[in-house]
Length: 266
Image 1 (cartoon, helix red, strand yellow):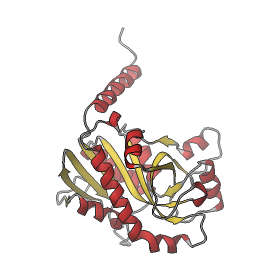
Image 2 (cartoon, one colour):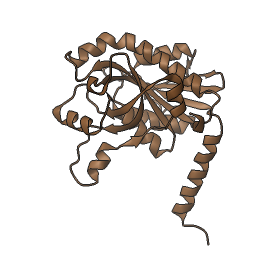
Image 3 (cartoon, helix red, strand yellow):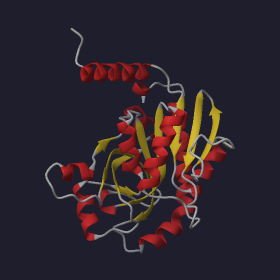
Image 4 (spheres, one colour):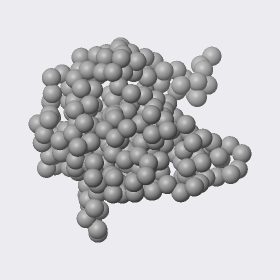
């Protein structure tokens, strides 16, 4: 007797993932929300902008691509908002661009890189770069049983013990919301999430990556201390350039470490 359709589908998916873990990573998708954060990585790997977009007509999303060692690298920046001309930050753009990029490019691994706020109470300092162990939302409050868990949307990042050890990276939990500031309600959920860093895209990328079964890691550099004594916006802008350089260096190290390795070796 043939197994139920659902069981057969799950078995095929597990077999596919097992096969992926045994072959070297070939195609990397790097998702970065801000142009200031993206361009140093573009320049580092000598990526070029794709004039023939793989995305739907009219969207502002930008793809940079190139070959580095044994890797096909695709860096996707969501572009500027067509009406206001600012970077298309936040969970909506991140979700859409992650979904479209996976569909078009079929990556073996996603790297979501960017700046983030850090919590000094959890040991974060300006300029620290963290690899997220897990990601969750802090601004999707649905106080109904089970829906509350859906709102938090806790997901594990790809486990990369060798990468963490080799690069001596700090590891912490990442919490995501669509506001730069932090309301008392957000703060309570962030504490419940046991987060060391907070951003505006990570958990959205993780949701889509999990949905489409693409492993993802999250590299976040601290521009501001959320529980510090300086206004968040001022501190973010003051440190953005310096911290972006640290982010670029770490992303470069991560890419070099991934080259030639399969997922199980990370």
